[in-house]
Image (cartoon, rainbow, N blue to C red; front, side, top):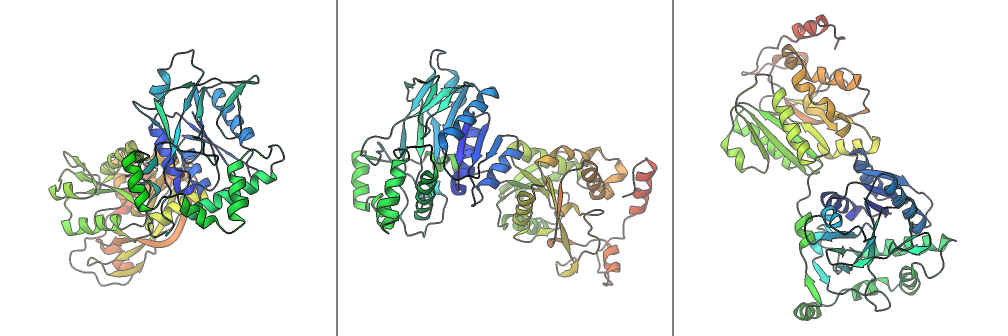
Length: 507
């Protein structure tokens, strides 16, 4: 297991958690110390997935030894074999296999492993490059030194024990007052990205030094680097110059690369460069015109929150989609259930890849550019399992008619306006378990199951789903002329009556 004490590390936190969970860490135990930058929301997302145990400490005293000791002992109680006490800016990189396999191979006589760490250079201060840290920072020191000019001390991975005591700084551990001995081994190294922008450095020094000043337990030697930078640079107004001095000029960088003092290390860039989107949008398609499919797909690509688009061919695959930036699932035959089976198959495909939420978008509809981001924001803010929105009705030619008068979060939510979080994933199978007559009213049946399950729901009164009306009922309700190509209103009433005849409550 991995323990993590974090405060305002949102720029690196999600990448760090995903990396270590992919490298064989069974579970993360994290303590958030009053983060205000979105870090807490990131931790809560991993908690809802069942991958993280979250603790919170509002008192900003950076009481690291106490809080990390508590987490390390929790890890032992939860059945961990080994414990990695990490900071948010550390990536524990195994040379072969993953962290789990590497530690499992150690002899039973080994109670700890000493792991060396080296720093990536900070990026230039100009702030023009807005790419993620792993794209901007690829130059790593071969040997990194502390403020005294000495090589950075290694950190310790230790066997889990319910009586372990972690030292301040996360570098060592004790049992019954005895320091746990660690063997030196190059099977794992720490890729350390402590400084990722001037703003982040200033916040880190200010928060860290002032928190240590409030901590009456620790002596003045703890956090010595933070304290000195705070006193000698931040308070003196020379922190920008200090930051610039951390990165050599281009000529010096070129010379250090030749001498091997710097390494162009792109491992993190490669490992983190294509993060999995949080949301998958599932689109079943049958024989819709390619132009409509393209509009639908383009609206997913244009989302301000990156999404995975899963297009599921219901027996009639389009070859051109193979070249789109999408997952293309091809079912060998049509199921004739108005997309219900393709929705489930596409959902399970995306969930198997690791997404956190699933939305739906029919092939003839499209999203506004901020639809998914606003839904996700609401899901995080309210810690809801299911988010819904209103929809905007459009004519066959795509022109807007107006808000949908039918939307009601307790009675009717269109399938295209639904977002399922992990807590609602177990209900997705209802797409195929509903009776055959139910597919015509599948969105109402799915809402019924969501309400019956007692899941936390939240509705957004925004028409960010654009729904192409292909049936005459809504045209009549809005006093619109009915264009050519519109189909008669389906016989929903028969499905409703059959649903109640089967002993179900009214929809």
